[in-house]
Length: 133
Image (cartoon, rainbow, N blue to C red):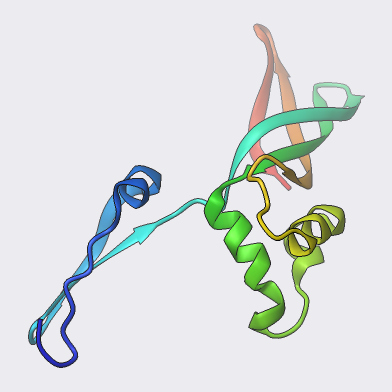
């Protein structure tokens, strides 16, 4: 619009992928700014790997599988340029290698994360507690 002032609009695809709408509005001089969030992955399914029951308490081990979004795929491809390979902390190494080695990766692979959920037994059945890892 003039030096150091741009009018940036999201594409139709970008608007579709925004999670939760615009937030954090700021107005400085000639700049009117909003922030948006793009999810890098979405929960696809949960695989239960084990259950340990101890009286009225139980711990459930699980693997949460996340389907990577196009933003997540782009992020993985940028990891080496961000300094250091933190890939193993974010997703499983096999998924990262698959994406880093492909020219045009698909967004249907899974990142996986181990999790533990705690439950308590009540008269009407098992209920999750707020604590999970």
